[in-house]
Image (tube, rainbow, N blue to C red; front, top):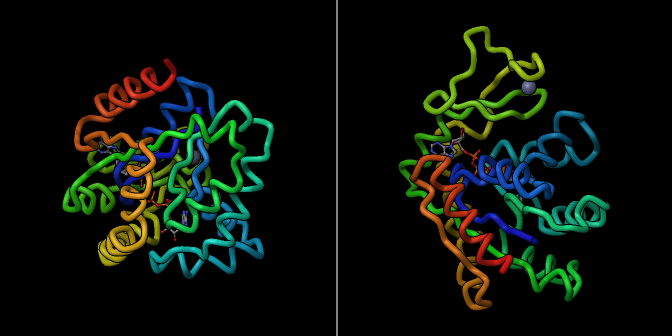
Length: 217
Ligand code: ADP
Ligand code: ADP
Ligand code: ZN
């Protein structure tokens, strides 16, 4: 099963991808997580992309496609994968098609998680993450402990640089202009599903499970 989770920043892609990964035992591939990891490690790639991430702009397609090509070649992806935050542009979607073999493409399914923009601004303004392990906290949904330390790993819980309101608005604009066209692109191919991302995490997951069970038949 090869899934793409599509949706605006803050729609809940990462939250749902983790649940899908646990239940179906296929890896979550988050280009955002991979890039933030490179930034934290101050690798050559990390130094190159840090400012782009901080501004809420998109990293060039060729860099992203190289990351994905390498990742999808890993043994753990052979049974399937969940793409979270990729593709984000039409050229990325076209690049993905080249990377995947015919056999894999047969099972490619796209699920859009839809959430209106004002809800997104509220969610992302209250998102916090562990600087060390990346675990998600949210002032509204699952607040971090008072000492500001991650219960999982002891890391410091921080606000992402790009989760400031001004940058959130910028990311939403980038989404509308560069990523939203993917919806029509995939609808034309008849492999597209949409879920209402404003429901509780558990309700959204139930809808996704239903879609997956249909796909697997
Ligand atoms: P969110 O989950 O809030 O949508 P991500 O973690 O997916 O954010 O992405 C954070 C940032 O990483 C993006 O704003 C962008 O700069 C960069 N990025 C992540 N995935 C891609 C991609 N597929 N193409 C280009 N840039 C990306
Ligand atoms: P994305 O990966 O699409 O950027 P996340 O999964 O990181 O989105 O979710 C963004 C923020 O909203 C997180 O802090 C998360 O805890 C919260 N969140 C996710 N799903 C829901 C939901 N269904 N209802 C309320 N808050 C949610
Ligand atoms: Zn942690």
